Length: 270
Image (tube, one colour):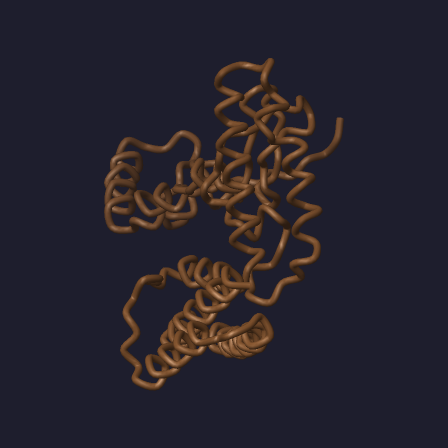
């Protein structure tokens, strides 16, 4: 047998320490000694609460004192497959179960950047988006699950549609900028009327130039100017967003919106 040390003190020992030496029980104590001890014990426990109620109250503990998580915290960090119950950490998007190949229900807490494994920022490498998009569609496209249950076919349609929207949103600077501000809780009105006189004058001049363009060479020149202005506004947005100047970021989005529309109108005429 191993020798073990006691990690707790018996209550009797605690009581003995609370009493004066002369009042402790001795063998063959007289009736008067016992009555005196009883009276002292009652008084000690009543007037020295740190051996009574406070001693017991100190034994109170919470679940967190043992390092456990609440149910809500566990649910937020761990997800399991609805079909095979395999557990997956919440650090990566769980759209598809690699274990049983079942498509998972849409989780709206996963943003578009997470779907493509990207950091949430404006300047991203768009060249790699298409490859990741195709990889997701190889797993999520509804045509690939036509023989599965109705529930999983619905999951496939919803997940595939969301991946398509994520790809289209992140692939273009303007839609990516709008999405980023909405993630920050900023209301973006894409149809807001232009009130800035300088921008309004510039927009009217661009429209007149497009309408009066006599040939494709002139239109291409205007198109080139629009692309330059769009890039300048895009860079301005990146700086405003990084410094969390959301008012200026909104102004940049408004300029980007009109430059892009002008560019689209030119393409129709070419």
